[in-house]
Image (tube, rainbow, N blue to C red; front, side, top):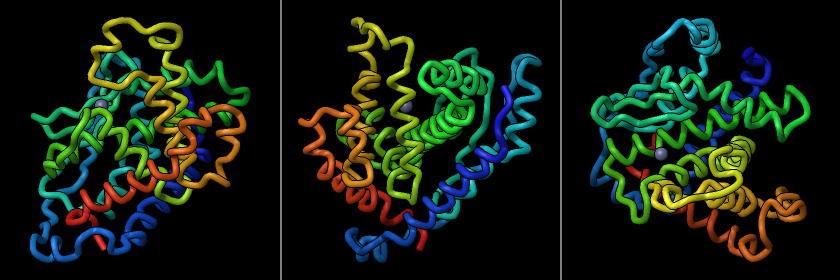
Length: 273
Ligand SMILES: [Zn+2]
């Protein structure tokens, strides 16, 4: 269950670039008048809270994650970029499953500490080297955190959406990671984590169709499409290696363009200069 500090440090270099790119990319497509008329006051931050553990099983891992600043670095990047009306908590919790939650009553994101071993198991079948597995786990962690950040922002900023909130949360995570420098690797890891989802890997049943989430395979294809659409030359291999169908691939540049313009518009009054 050991994490590579080197890999981890590289990842957070990437999301630091992500934050800078998001600030620098604001290109006036969103309405400057709207933000001038309704200035948002920065009254809140993402605040890391101590891990909530039910047993002694994860004491060492929780201490290591805290020392390596996994959540702290995410909070720093978010706080550098976003103007928030209230604090939003961010913590690891022992939940008994590989999952993550946003709890509106507490305005708190909980990332289940079990996700690290769960994702390692899922990725072990798809990657050969320890470094590849660790990169994928790190990327999947980032995608998961930013998905929950999507739920939190929908709540505290009262962001309007049509369709499903779960798809909105995926879309915020995809935008944040892909629109940064090289955070798209985390989006790809997030996509793969859906592809390797053992519960939907072989068959789906009625409960999957009734679920508030899109099917894991749909989430996988949408994320992959957005990465491909962000730069069809750089990610030509996603099409060549059949990560995507040619039919979907045709629409991906337009899907990515819509994604970025939507989020810059929705967050216009809440992005720092
Ligand atoms: Zn969700």
